[in-house]
Image 1: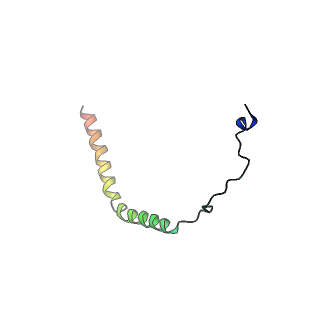
Image 2 (image 1 turned 30 degrees about the horizontal axis):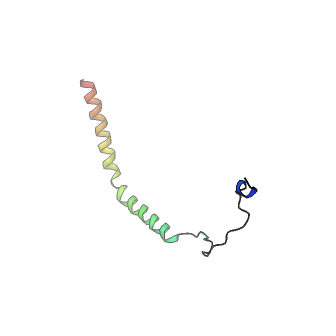
Image 3 (image 1 turned 45 degrees about the vertical axis):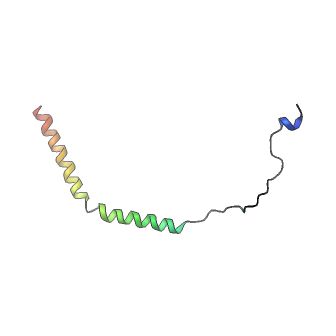
Length: 69
């Protein structure tokens, strides 16, 4: 084997046509995410007492069912 076959490290920098991508803040998507969260909060927080009532009733009925069996 020759030396070039065993040595597989890159010795030269590869130059490309496309420019280097530098990340940027995606403010539009952040705004959409915050708006989505606030809408969900406004919709779900008023439903929380009903969810709590259903959960408590299910626990009470489960306890009564286990007591009778």
